[in-house]
Amino acid sequence: MRRIAGAAALGLVAGFLGGLFGIGGGLVMVPGLVLWMGMDQHRAHGTSVAAIVGAATASVIPFAARGEVDWMSAVWILCGSMAGAYTGARLVSRIPAVWLARAFVTLTVVAAIRMGMEP
Figure 1 (cartoon, one colour):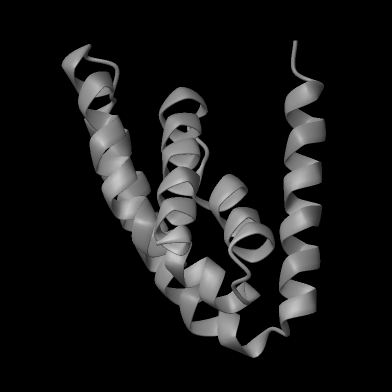
Figure 2 (figure 1 turned 30 degrees about the horizontal axis):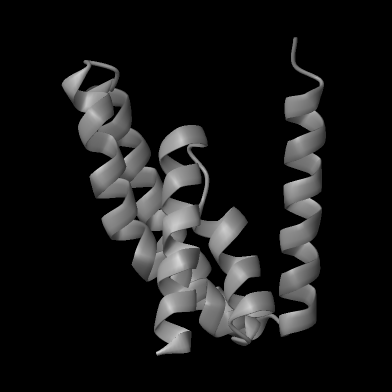
């Protein structure tokens, strides 16, 4: 029961941040699953990806209702992201967990720095 409550709380936080900032799946869920839920790195990535499907579907509804989705761009981004995600998911098992975690942190820090430099 405790694990279910922890997973639900993590999902709530990740979903809220995903809807608010467009983040949550990887940035919140993966560290939460590893550090809070005790999941290994590879399983956390897979679990996060599975949960993103529902969260993304739910969060697009308010944006679409307000006309804030460029559907043509979204379709092309979807095509590219599906191909990239499939390829990345196939290759991730070849990367040791420690290097996967380090790459994740590096990418997150670089993205934060770039975003912080925007006017």
